[in-house]
Length: 106
Length: 139
Image (cartoon, rainbow over all chains, first blue to last red; front, side, top):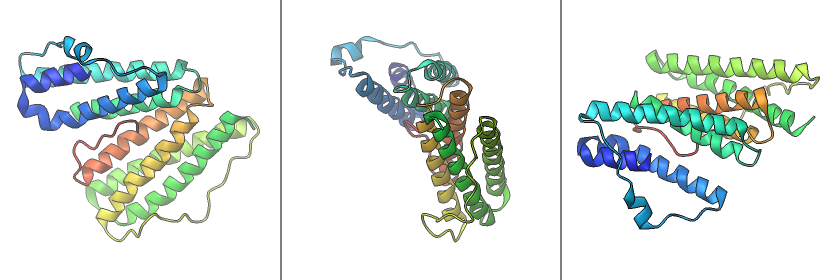
């Protein structure tokens, strides 16, 4: 999602004000997940390697992010419901965060 | 009592507090903001009722509401009422989030739905107070 937001903001700088806070949420969510899992941050080369494709118009690009957030919410919710007790609160919190993103992008 | 029902009892106490808080909030709002507060109040009452049914079903006496709850700051106008609404949702969300750990199955689903709804309402209230987009990581 971080790559998708960055690619969308690069393609459509006018969307940056609207999307930057959501991107910041994703970065914070990812950091929390990494801490919980004990996974180190990836190197700069790994994070720069992916380039997400962006729709040919801003409305389409926002719609694509909306769909991705919806899918992400569903995935995080399912993971929360299936998780062991230690991870359920974090996964549920990420699902709730993504629900707020879905609403903002609607 | 189990860890799960303890957590649901705490969630019920949080819902009681939120319902009290929305009484204070609603008294200072009009128009669309009042309607938003009334919808939130109804949602918290629904969740309270479901929790009471759930706890009663397993033979646990559901904690009753207190006569009054201390407010974190004076609520004197629409702006402070909306700030309180944000806090009510954040506090309820935090309790529901904790409840995700010890619960399983339908109880965890109840907690996840409640956490998600609290996060959505908190973001809406932040937007109502001018914060855009009003979302936060890890609500």
